[in-house]
Amino acid sequence: MAILVTRPHPDDETTAAGLRARGFDVLLAPMLRFEAAAFHDDSDAHYGAVIVTSANALRGIESQLKASPLLKLPLFAVGEHTAEAARRIGFEQVIPAKGDAASLRDLVAASVKAKALKKTSPLLYLAGADLARDLAGELGERGFTVVTQTTYRMIPLSSLPRETCDAFAANQVEAVLHYSRRSARAFLESVRAAGVEISALSVPQCCISAGVASVIRDAGATRVMAAASPDENALFAALDRALRP
Image 1 (cartoon, rainbow, N blue to C red):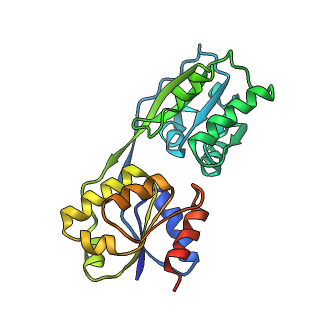
Image 2: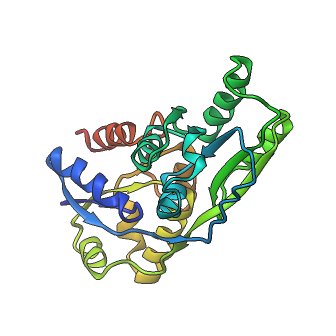
């Protein structure tokens, strides 16, 4: 019996290592494919800080950031995973939020009150092509000027690996891990196309957030577990709860 990880590559490998360390067998079926987008680093722009809601936004432009003045700016990261990616690239001042866009928005606002950030300087938002939340708009309502640059897109995959289809057909999947609403939708479409929807939705579905869980639950799954917070440790805890006798 294996845990199916639907997280995009290469982050799926990190998840797989964590699961194997806990004694699980793992199957990988990334439901989204990363694709970098063109990035234009305007040397004449004067930003007050950088905001990032995914490590993928940095992965897409890492090679273009060497010696960039952006590395000297404060970077507000959605969570610790993204913060680690920013530090690895070379950002000198990285401030992580609690794992979701709302906490990131509030962290940026609090930094102004603490006089660590000025509203007069625009924020550079490094983002994906498909945004689940209008963070720039929410910050704009609070008086910030936000310049959004798309640095990557995630392309839904239309089919499951043959190994995964065979595992569902043989009832060899113990649970499925879901990391975003888009990847959850791609998973649902793929299991339907492969003719394994009933088997796929009969096992525990462990989701990174309540929003992701709602996508899976609306599709008819009844054994759906949401993480208590939007991070992988909490997702693993949800998996443990789901598999508890």
